[in-house]
Length: 66
Image (cartoon, rainbow, N blue to C red):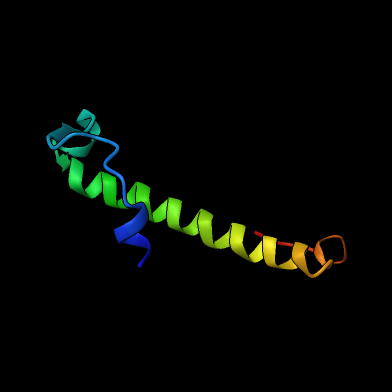
């Protein structure tokens, strides 16, 4: 599974205070790490799709819209 192999803690466990415009809310580092790893997972999937087209010689024949 991707999470077991690639999940990474980018921030140590603590809470981050959000700017005053957000009523003094706090975010914890677990949520931030999960969000950043979700972005990383998405990048990995897109990379695999593009590499699949490249391996088949279709990369220059395909328009990728993101």
